[in-house]
Image (cartoon, rainbow, N blue to C red; front, side):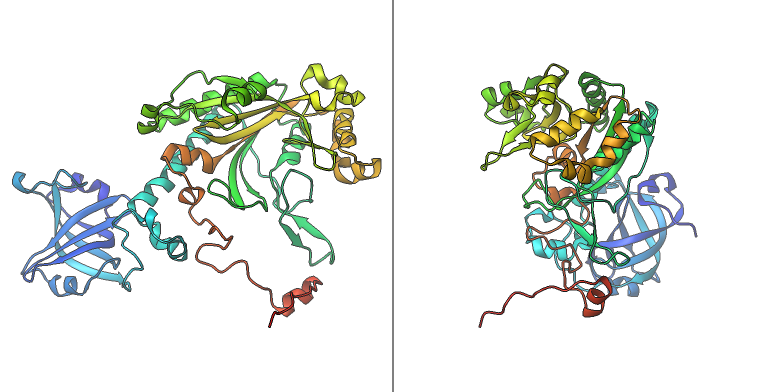
Length: 466
């Protein structure tokens, strides 16, 4: 018999159906057994009556057994309707049960909110944790959010293009994760901190409107809203100014959030220069919600723009504040080219903040070779170093690259705000622990001597302390 999803059972009242899923609860009353069965679409109560041929099998079941259940869908009498649970007005009278897989006693109860459980246990058994109603809801919300953004961008002429995962180590603000090359021993690839250079090269390639759901990997210190890996909605456009990018992204965020049933506190989004934000809030990642808006789960978005381009390190050396590929604001381009008043130069950088988190950041980019070269000269790089690091970009800019700009929106941080969560791991299917260990599996771990030899790698193990 064809499988019926639990969400569709009301359409089959009076008919015999086959459902498949997990046993959430078993209530054995001796002569009859009640089973709450759950699949990805919902849950329903089933009853195994005294004369049912399935009674003996029902008594073998326990939580999280995977079963195939055959039975007739019936409407409950009015006095037995449970309006507090989904499908509380129907039940399935079971005529047959097939055990598809048994389950040991689960490591924790997934019928309750698992957020308060020990993190190591939750992540060791993440595949069990993901069965909980809360995690199912959050991961599905993430999928709906991404789908809505994709549709928005496709409708506006954006082309979805994937960029490489194995690339060159470049200065993007964080430490790289590196991958040794077997074919070129002693040399390494880097995993992308972002697709920054490739998306600019796509603008040089004439695509004009690009996006992708990009995986980004950064060896940063871990915290509640930051992990080694994240996903970003990466967007780049040609022939735009910063206001064009901000308006499009604001339209997408408003449409998507409201489509998902969320309330936005203020439209259009307020805009603050970096200097104004620091003076008013003391930070560029602020939360403007009232207490009532916090209680009601409102989303309070704002733009911060006109950031300082450079800041001085403790040794006095200048470095970029956001991105070396950004452009200065037009009126400060000459200051950059002449390397004058470095600390006063502002960049066409804009961040989107929501409820105290930075959820997106972007800029109008340098598209002229002399601007990018001047940025690296300000940071103290020699001509040889500049050529080694960004020579390919300088060449692209000398071959007709149009003006362009874009943004990257952090999927996890946006979904955190949509779901009312405070930790990145709650909106990722398989996050890392606070200590940087993977869910379920045991990475990082040592490689075998054979693997190291094949890669041409030797290393000195730390001394043992007796």
